[in-house]
Length: 211
Image (cartoon, rainbow, N blue to C red):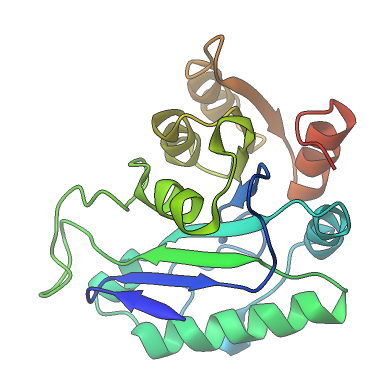
């Protein structure tokens, strides 16, 4: 585990992802229920099908990398200990389903945060690509063939900025779907899905991530 500076978290597991395309995942609203600043392990709730979707990628040796903005730390709602406890609970819940995250990166910096976290537009904070690029560099990932799944347009925007292949927005809102599709280019594919499980199924069935 590495905590870079005071507002950055980077934890890389032991799985070998060198040369492989990865699946980048946002956390709240994608893997777990969004409780608006999740800082207590007892409030964590896995979303239906999320663990099995991650396990499916694990079985195919696709590196699964969590990239999450954590402005709740900057705002003083919880601290890195709270984040660590939530992540430990998440890891345990995933392990119970035979799933794991291969890396976890988090950025606590925010323009409205308290010192020392008051930093506007930090390179790691999505929609900036810093977390994706850092994971790619530290793990030797094939970023141009990687994908991201998130529940906010800024998740996909980070993917665009990082030069990865595509993204899936987990949403049922038409406005969000339209905003996501506006990011599509010949070099960045965009899709939408109602859940992580369906997003992963679509990516794999279309051959976007090789197993």
